[in-house]
Image 1 (cartoon, helix red, strand yellow):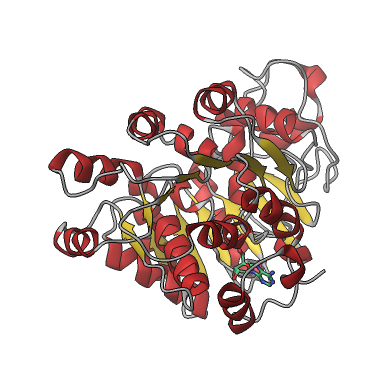
Image 2: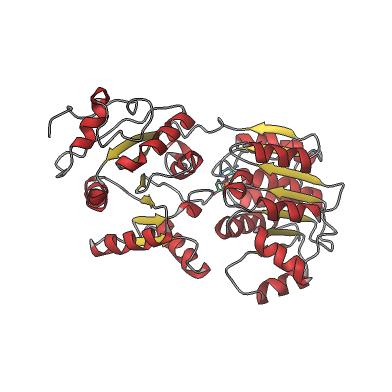
Length: 411
Ligand code: AMP
C-alpha cells in the first residue's frame, strides 16, 4: 500500500517522499481515509506509531488552499509535544502553502502575537496559553472547521480538561473533531459523547498494554539506599541511554546533581525548566551528548526520544497509567528495552495497582554484589505467610506476584 493509493494530493505526497516515508504505518493506513471522508475519528495509538501524519496529512488536504484562519486547531498537553507536532505538520505542509503556528506557555507573548496576527491555517497549542490568547483577543476560533484533541487522557491527568472544554465551547459547529487517547477513562468517554459526532474508532495496538518487548523488574530497596542502588544499577547496566523518572521536580534536580557528581552526563526535564532549557536537554539527549535523562512525568509521554535502552523508575508512579506512559519510552519499534522500578516498603500498594493495570506481574530482582543493608525487605516479599513484617504491612492481599531472581533468606 502506498500513500498515493490513500488518495492524497501531489503536494502532500511530495512532502511524504521528502521525509523518506515509503509506506503508510498501520494507523495512517486506517485513519487517513476516515479523516479524508470528513468523519470524526477516535484514535487510540501511542506516539511513535506515525499518529501525527495520520491526522496531519488528511487534515491538510481538507484545508486545501491557504485562507484566513485558524481553520484547524490541534491541542496538545505539553509544550514539548506541541512543538514537536507543529514542526511535523510544518514539514508535511511544506509544498502546500498552508501555514502552521505554535502557541504554548512558558515563553513570552510577542512572537506568538505576531504569528497569530499574520495568520495561520493550522494552530498547534497547549490549552492554557490558547485560552489566554482568546481572552486577550489575540486569537479567535470562529473560522475553525477542524479540531484535534491529542493525548486526551494526558490532558485529563494534567488537569486540563476544564480548559479543553472551555476552548471547545468556542469552536463552531459543524466541525470535524479528531480525538486521540491511549486509555479511555470515564471523563474522556463523556468528553467524546459531548464533543464528537458519531466518531469512527481506529485502534492500533492494545489498550493499556505496554510494549511486549519490554522486560520489567522490581528492585526492592530501603529508602535510605535508593540513591546508592540507582548509582550501582547505572554502573552495572549496559545502557546506551536511560531515562530516570522522579515524582517531583526537586527530586529530579537533586538526583541529577548526584549523578553528575558521579560522572554521568545528565540532562533534566521538568516543568520548572525554561523552554530553552527543556529543548536543549532533549536535543542533547537525542544526540547522545547526555546518557541519562532525569525527568518528571511531564516527559513520560509523547516525546519522540529514539532508542532508549532503559527506563528506571526511581520513584514508583502513583498512577498506574503513568507506569505505562513512562515505559512507553523503551522497547519501541521492537527494540528490546528494560524497565526497572525501585520499590520501597511504602510503594507496595502502588506496585500492586500497576500490576493490576498492566495485567502482568513484575518479577523481583536483586542486584548481585550490592551491599543491601535491609534484606528483611526481600524476605518479607518472599515469605508473606510470616505476616506482619515491615515490608508487607499496609499492603493488602498477600505477596507481590512474580518470580524471584534470588534465593530467599540468602544474603
Ligand atoms: P509520531 O507517532 O507521529 O510521533 O511519529 C513517530 C515517528 O515516525 C516520527 O519520527 C515520524 O517522522 C515517523 N514516521 C511517521 N510516519 C512514518 C512513515 N509512514 N514511515 C516512516 N516513518 C514515519
